[in-house]
Amino acid sequence: MAIQLEKNAETFYREAVARMSTPILEPVLVCLADEERDHAQWFERLKRVTEEAKADGERGEISGASLRSLVGDQKFSLAEVDLSEIDSAQELIELAVEHEKDTILFYQMLQSFIESPETTKELDEIIAQEDQHIKLLKECKVAVVNGER
Image (cartoon, rainbow, N blue to C red; front, side, top):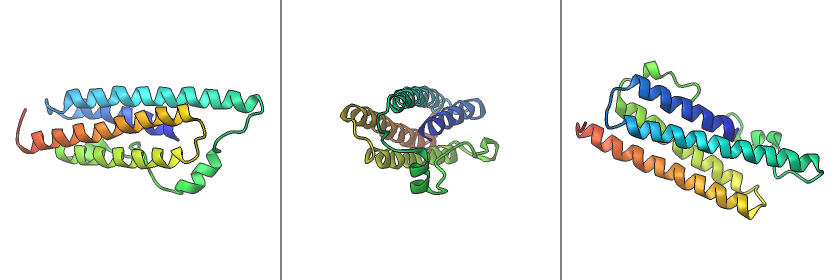
C-alpha cells in the first residue's frame, strides 16, 4: 500500500507540473515528486527484505490483509484525482497538503506494527520529509495567494 501511495503521489506531482503554469510552484512539485519516488524505492527495498525474511521462516511484522482491515476503505491515494478538474494552484496545493497529512497518519499507524528499530528510524525520516512537504506546500500557497511569481 505504501509503495502505491508514493508512486501515485509522484505521478500526481509530475502531472501537476505539466498542467499548472505557476512558476513558484513548479520547482516544489518537481522536488516533491522526486522525494516520493525515493520513498517508493525505500518501501520496495523494505518489501524485498521482508519477503526474503519470510522465505527464511521469519515472522512478518504485519500482513497486507491485517493492514487492509485496519484502514478499511479509506482512500490515501491521489490516483483517483482528475487534475483537469482542479481550477487553481491554490486548490491543487490544498489537495496535496491533505494527501501529505493522510500519508503521515498512515505511516504513523504502520509504525505501531514495526519491530525493527532501524526500520522505525527510517520511517521516521520519511514522515519528517512528508511533514516538510506540507510546510513547502503551505509556503507556496501563501506565495500564490499573494500573487508572487
